Amino acid sequence: MGGGIVGLSILREMVKRHPDLTFTLLEKEDAPGRHASGRNSGVLHAGFYYSPESLKARFTVEGNRLMTQYCLERGIAINRCGKVVVAKDEDDLKTLAELERRGRANGVNLKIVDEKELADIEPNAKTFGRAIYSPTTSSVNPLDVVNAVSAQLAAKNNVKFLFSERFVSRFGDNAVVTGKQKIEYGRLINTAGLYADKVAHAFGAGRRYTLVPFKGLYMEYKDPGLLRKHVYPVPDIKNPFLGVHFTVTADGKVKAGPTATPALWRENYAGLAGFNAGEMGDIMLRQARMFLQNSFGFRQIALQEIKKYMRGNFTAQAATLVKKIDISKFGDYIRPGIRAQLFDTRDMKLVMDFVVEHDGRSRSTHVLNAVSPAFTCAFTFASYVVDSIEKEG
Image (cartoon, rainbow, N blue to C red; front, side, top):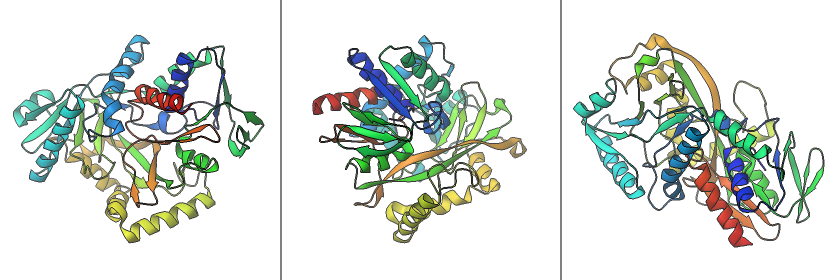
């Protein structure tokens, strides 16, 4: 249930292991990848941001390798440009050292470089003393990957895609009702992204969690000669956002972003399109409570991110990462995305790692938190999910 890269990758793994079974994919949109998977940055991450005990750390290095191999084998455009993470002050150098430690523990190929070495790798990047160089960070057009995996599955005789089929409710212990029909199942796997929590709650799973959507906006930079590598700031590793950075796309263009602004409803991409009053009320109430209680520093995050709606603040943050830039060459905001970020209502904090829950009675599995780098490690994460399903029986 859900036609993003995670759902497609789990289906791909299930088909590979169980060719004798029949599979049906339900997707509320008219094609796969309409939401997070088709709207993300397209960056294939290396794996040095994540604490070594996390699921993200376990899956990202191998996920990067497998996704790179998949693209190369199928002629999907991939820009293996690499990435640098730059510091602004002495405090950043401490975090830089922690990122290096995590990277080494996670088996990531990376290097700490000084300013002279950085100038050879990416002449226009600016740092304070030292930087991280990650040669295995790449970029792809995410929809190219989604469409390739989707086409591969659609060609299978035992796979059926049902598009424009919105989940409405659970029906007993082995069926769901969509907007069009009742469908019985042997095992249900929920990869509904922005709505994964709501679907899970219908099956009695994930009760302690709810989704808090954050909007990601990118801005084009009209001179592709600005950079040849991705350039990122040292992040605040206590929250899941990486800050405004420069990305070099699969076709060599440059964009800056993203924001991580609290969204007002789950599909709050632009203006009032798709306005959902019920969702807005629930989400704004949740956000107000988080703001007042300052859970996990939400107040500071919200205030910092709201400032990025002002074009001057957005471009100024991006400009700090490079030596030379022409602010007039920043273009329009491009296609936004929504980060389906899970929130733990018991501990009052954003969930940093992947979360998967099973409900034995309804034979259902729920992928509740599959945020970045889920695209990068979709194939390895899918193996983990299917392993856990097989253990459940």
